Image 1: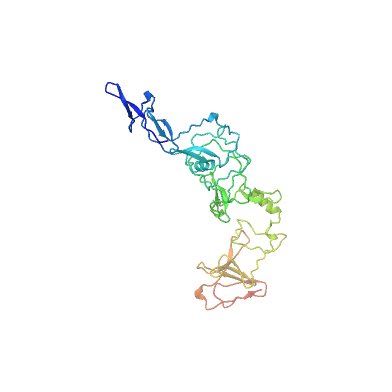
Image 2: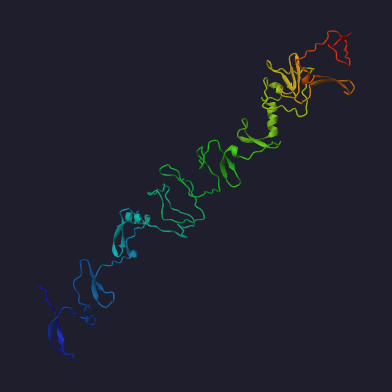
Length: 372
């Protein structure tokens, strides 16, 4: 059956009906007379007839579905799968998207959470499965600030998926105890042989040579020592250490060292070198060595060797030997060398073999005369 053009009544200027005529393009019946209030052309596929934005006529337009959640099927007890679908509007274009798409969009969205509470009580994230939480990305981005009264992890660990180091970008403050499961503490600087030293605010790696030095040891100064009987690193005072050395395998007398050697000059500190039981003090230089007293043995000093005593001088005066009297050493007899200008060679004086007294005259004689 072919399409027909409807007819309408024709009226004159006085409102009187004068005849019938076909509807012309653009003509329509107003809403007040039961019409649609507009001249319509067919819309596009999927459109419906609806009231226009001015609420003055009908027009063809896109479907705007309205879902009544209260009367929809209850799915609150159903576990959602990544392929489940939701109604979404993409910039005005309505459609459906899967749960996996929504999860990806939320993960990639940059946002800042401020003063928000997750779960029923403040500062607590609850209802987390006991299985590990794994992030597909190597980092969590987009969170510029996280403020909380405290984050508590109970019965679990924070680990790195690829077994690398978990780094803290700032200083880490630990109010409780710190348990180190491995045997190593790795610092930014790990110089061999250094020790950990507290400076009043922190521990730092320091070489022993960099520590402050004391130039004398007081009785109550302490050292560190390993207690092999009681176990552990402990302190010990200087007095306890000295007492322990005297009673242990360490020497308490020089006589316990059969070959003692000095590392420097021996200062007797105003004391005497004595012997016991009328023993001798033996000074025995090795080989051709000599005992040198009060000088270097070349320019001055007294040199003693087997069968020989040499008296040298660096004072500018001739060498002499003095023999004192028995009364408070009030007088002495000196035996002197002649001055250098009087010598033409070395002189040897041989003592007599008879007991007596040497007598000399006031004038020079050619030889000494032994008197009986």
